[in-house]
Image 1 (tube, rainbow, N blue to C red):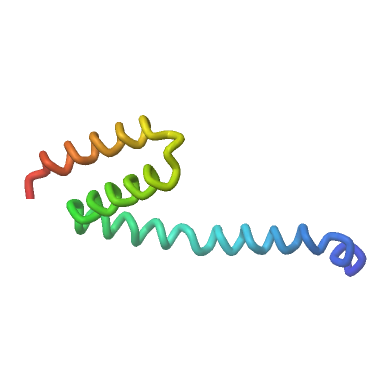
Image 2: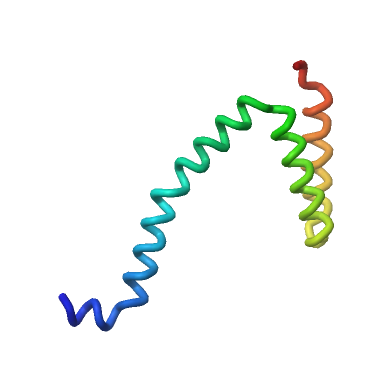
Length: 81
């Protein structure tokens, strides 16, 4: 077993990192969904801001970003709260 560990250190590091990500990511998404459900208007404004930042710094997919921006803005304008 020690011989295997010496020859495959990179494999074990990647295995550890993916395992750590599997433990950390689900609670992050859980709290993100709770936040988005608690504050729908604020979360939509944050998403609009993120899309605008992506459009400025990465203009390759500007049509997809514009479509997302228009749909989220329309949804934000029609939300009753």
